[in-house]
Amino acid sequence: MLAGWFNVLVFIGVYGLVGLKFWKMHGLGNDYIVIDNMENILSEKEKTSLAVKLCRRKFSVGADGLILIEKSFVADVKMRIFNSDGSEAEMCGNGIRCLAKYCYENGIVPKKEFNVETSAGVRKVWLTINGEGLVKSVRVDMGFPAFEKEKIPMVGSGLCINEKLKIAGQEFKITCLSLGNPHCVIFLGNVEDFPVERFGPLIEKHRFFPKGVNIEFVEVLNMGELKVRVWERGVGETFACGTGACASVVAGKILGKVSGKAVVHLIGGDLKVEYSGKVFLEGFVEKVFEGFLP
Figure 1 (cartoon, rainbow, N blue to C red):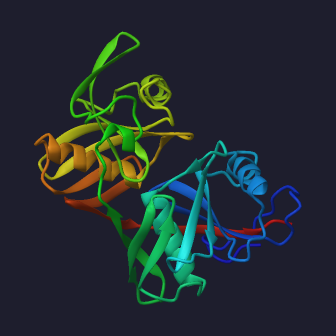
Figure 2 (cartoon, rainbow, N blue to C red; figure 1 turned 90 degrees about the vertical axis):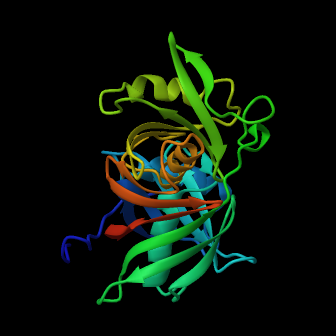
Figure 3 (tube, rainbow, N blue to C red; figure 1 turned 120 degrees about the vertical axis):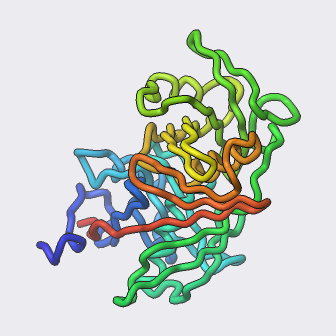
């Protein structure tokens, strides 16, 4: 049942949620399953189990996470985001851009500027619409980064700027911060050949990070460009990560490695990040297909 490349009806195994509509979307390959839960038809237990079942690649739709659009009393809509392992994330730059496109194109929020409630606070989005009335790209106000260890959270007090971390016989210099979710940024000479799959999970679950951490392995190309690979908490290495791109620029700016405006090259493509107190993120977002649970 095809209607062009981006309009495919997909049937999933029976989970007791007959007729529930979803969109499969991605921001530079960082992919999500987006569901309208404005009527609160999913229980908390169902949200976690559905994320695990639907995100399982090769056996289901497959995605890095599940995004639920819910009612908000402080913004136009609320975003709930669950990783593929069922854990809930506080914030996601690529995920909120997917949500913004879904909300606009489905008439949930028919505005080019609106506010989204997240677990990390309210975030504003600006939409760029093409000639066909579809969302081409989204710019997000990502808020202010937090550097205090207790706010990341991270064991200890004070800041973690270019501190030493020794793990599995290798020493790294780490800079940690929060953009609503925790990040550990490591600058390397060459990220292409670095064994992300070896060190990513070790750092993610290190005792320094009681709630886990997202890790950015960053190579500086010049003052306006970074090359980044991301190990995402609860997911693994992803094609892109919006908050990870922002964290990389923030850390680079603090260490004098990059200016406050940079292009971040990720496996899935490029994101534009600006940092001058607040952080702003901009990039393309796409719908892959839509379907219903049978």
